[in-house]
Image (cartoon, rainbow, N blue to C red; front, side, top):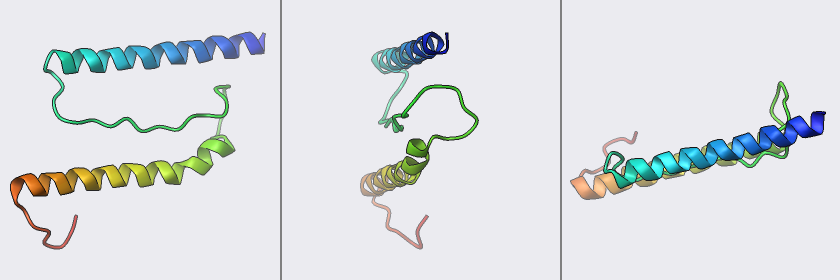
Length: 91
């Protein structure tokens, strides 16, 4: 029974991801979502229920935070380029 529930849960998660992607596409297509967006995530080792992060996800967290910070830095640099601002002490 547990294997069946796990497969069903995994399937429902994939359906939710597809629905989220379709919603983003629709918003972009209708002009309601402008500008850039970046989707960052971590591929889990398992989608079984648990009360703590798996070792795989835990090990990937620092990389995810680094990727998010790097993306924010790119957006800030692009904004400064477009507005002609200079860095006066950082963010």
